[in-house]
Length: 112
Image (cartoon, rainbow, N blue to C red; front, side, top):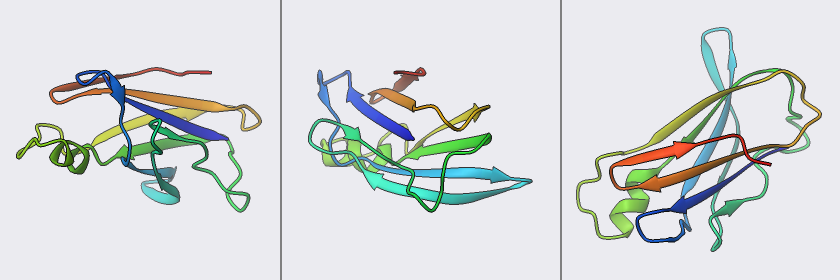
């Protein structure tokens, strides 16, 4: 399972309503395999569905941070989107990829 959590560190609150797309690399192409939006707590509890089990490979999460920041009153966001690439060696684990977001930067890590 692949999950995420977006926290707006500038506001000190969860980032609700952020659209997130999950893709997997297949040779030189990226194949979309999941999509959703963060809930009121900034969480997206599953980006993978039963027809797309997690398998070894390279994945990419794309966060629509531009729309989120415009909704927060920032007319011209510095970061229109954030892309996080990561590798999975074994697909039977839970992969939690949080995003700590501010209007001019971000940080991420492998959570639990």
